[in-house]
Length: 473
Image (tube, rainbow, N blue to C red; front, side, top):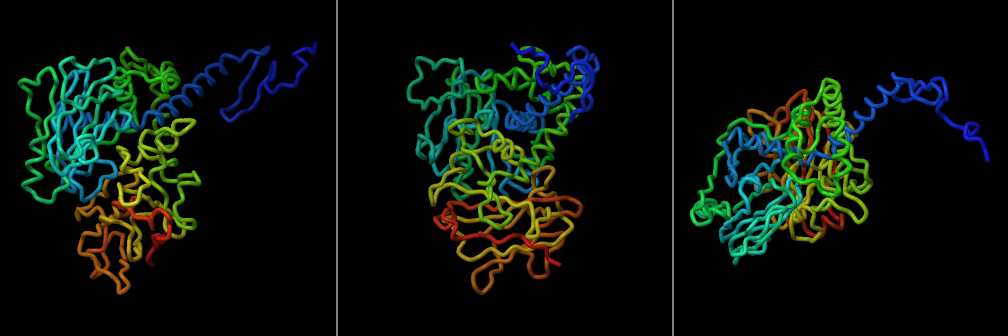
């Protein structure tokens, strides 16, 4: 038998070796005390970065929920109404023209919950706290626009025996996101439908608390998680409020040496805090890389252009053989929520989002410069299209006194003779092109989403395409 000590090995029996994390030393095959400390610190740092990335959709919702509760006083079942540019400044990659009616709740606080959904032209839905859809409501839900009662049950809760006449849906998480929007353009109908939306505990169904629709009223707020210890505080909070799913058990195990453990308060020591602070910085930097510099071949929508698919995963976040990890990080770093309507490949249905971060020359889009984009005629949509600009750091509207986030095809746009439209982006509007312009801020990078509402076949077969955004000299 060959003596194991004579086999070739990389690590020295006694001595040191240079590695990407510095020099490691050994004595008789054992790592020295200094190397043990270095290796554990590196191990915990690597795990912290990976768990930061894994938790982005969960912590993003937690930060949004906390903002709604502290800034607007939203309670379980209430909704916050955001309509204006200023209302939406705290919301990741919001649509500039769509009013949002959104709320959060916790089924452990409420018990089984009833959503009394109004009849009419509406679109609504419920997502769990990993931002996976549970059910649509309204025209695309089981009620098909006829309205009715939904009974929402958390894991471990039982369906009441006397619950009849409900659409029963079960949530894998205790915390929920629920939202809807009115599709009617009649203000009185929209107001009546909004007032008819009621959410209450099943146990209080005989005398339910009235749902409050809280106007955002231009209050300043932030719905994105900070890349500091507050990120880990929210993650620890969510782990104590939510069940651990089978797919996440290994990730949760990585958090234990970092002071984040289910059933225990979050009280990291000085070493853990230092590692978590640095990991949050590297974690967010990595998320920006995955989001703004996508490397998946399928991200490229039109070869030779800078446009990329913004959504590279299905609504359930799964593939045949694995959970969509990098794709999930990329989307939920820069956006919130994902539904089947945003991933459908059926012409004339749903929406498609494409994003751009670089100009024609491959340079990052910067707020100091002036740019133009020509939108060819016959944009392949049954409804409308829009382009919206976002701040690279906040992923929200670019905050300017103009209160303009982008350009919408339903606006009074100036067209060229062939039906194409020239759009402009920069600190100041070109003279006479104000309706075709969206502002940027010097010193800050930006990116854009081009949204297709009810995209048609030429979008999917790629016979219609956009050119790149070009710098105007």
